[in-house]
Image (cartoon, rainbow, N blue to C red; front, side, top):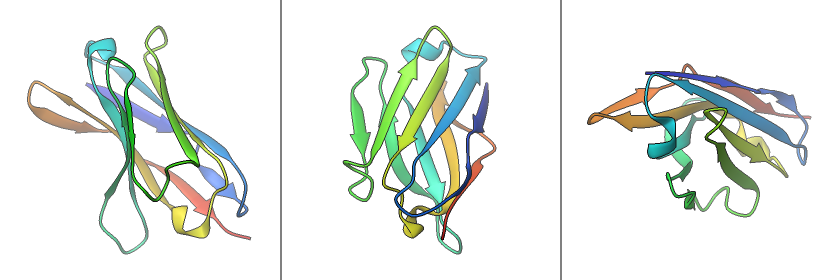
Length: 114
């Protein structure tokens, strides 16, 4: 199982970014897959996930600003992040569960600062 996150960078408050997570090594279309983040000096926290049926869940802190989606043909998950705030600064990870084990991507850094 491989997860490759990309798309992070430096953005001003109020700006937007789109993260991508490319997946390989498992039946992508059957899995729930999600985004987590680790803010500086804090523990990793849930951001959003999307099921095989395209049902979505969001943390309260990002609801209404972030949108998670997936493309099963390209085996890729996305996180569209709008109206970014400094508190969204974090390393963002994609994660899935396969055969009762969690798999994590390597993370991509998002910095929201003026």
